[in-house]
Length: 309
Image (cartoon, rainbow, N blue to C red; front, side, top):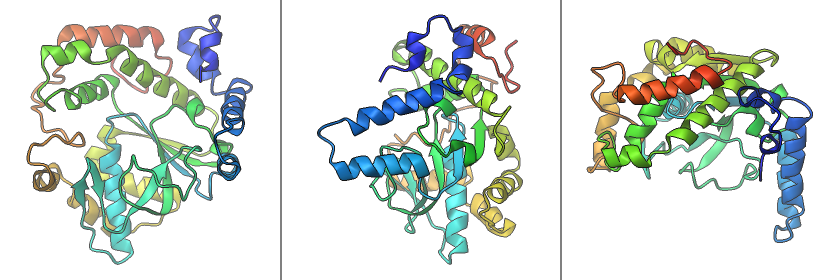
């Protein structure tokens, strides 16, 4: 479905991500999406009812983790999953299956997608979803279809946009972590940057008026994983003891994750963890960095401390 922004050329591109958060554009786009599903003749009436009910109530979960792509969200959520498993009496063991981190006890999070109501199998996540406590999304606020967004406790996870794009480029290269000139020519630099800008501008605006929202940076989580995740889980009301978080994150250092990856994927084609050389601030060519920053200087309304110089 074409977003309203495509039909509003009078809006400055740098501000459309903000306008689309607000009434009437956000509500209008939600209504269009609902109407499209409800009027779809091939969909059973029971499925339509589930989708509508899920949009209105979003189950009973009120915790949302909104994360910029390649910002460490899978590592962060894995640590929480291990801590929850330990808290429930499990052994906290995990493994890599189908390019996804999984525990025998299942997953306690799912994507916030109203077209996939709770109880429906989400094949993209891999593994069984049991007793979900957290929703996850890579979308800006205005692309999330839920009437309960204003009532949710939202944690936004950010990363420097250049670093995020570099990470995605390296992981999507034909050989992960070893990109070539051919990879550079086919990588979708423009759309990736546009998506990141949408995320920043949209959530930057939401920070100004949402009652329950916190922002964390990838480097904050890396520098103090236990403290940061204790703050996050307390905010969500999960009450996970600090010692369990300490144990969980001690199990997912890069070296320990590498052991799991090698055991599951000898060719190392996984896209979750990068082991490339980080001897330089960025491994991208200088002209690429300047191109990205030039667009950011013109389009980024809320930079959250990104270095645009």
